[in-house]
Length: 203
View: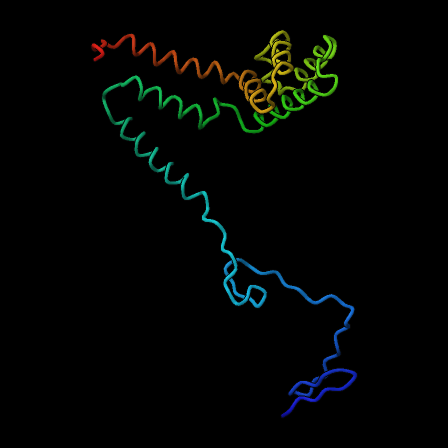
């Protein structure tokens, strides 16, 4: 059966009349999914997504788990190994700090830095103290109870003197969450074990 056309529409082989498309109307579109072929891509498969980053961190997780199991089963206590385990534990648990607390403190510090570096570039003593009050009062209760207002003033003064935003925020957030002290504790443990171990002559 042949197709016939008319001014009012087109006729399909089954006899169904299809109304003509309004030339002013936009062409219908459809979303292409990754890994499919379509005329819009010249018949070639569209770009596939990059391999998931999960593969690499899962590999490292399995490797770390095997290493930790081996270390836990050993009878010795190597200073470097013990320090590495302590660092891994602290990093994984964020020194017992939940992610919500980290986010809250980091955002407060970031806003404080931005406020301190708005014109005029050199904030007045009153502005520094006001910023310290805002930062102190906005801290989560557990963090606020572990610090003092004097320490917050010192942190704010440090933020004002830092030229780079991100390093300043990292340092201040680490100070407020006690992560710097945590790092020193790990270093101290390594040094204590090293001092208790008989040293060998260095070639």
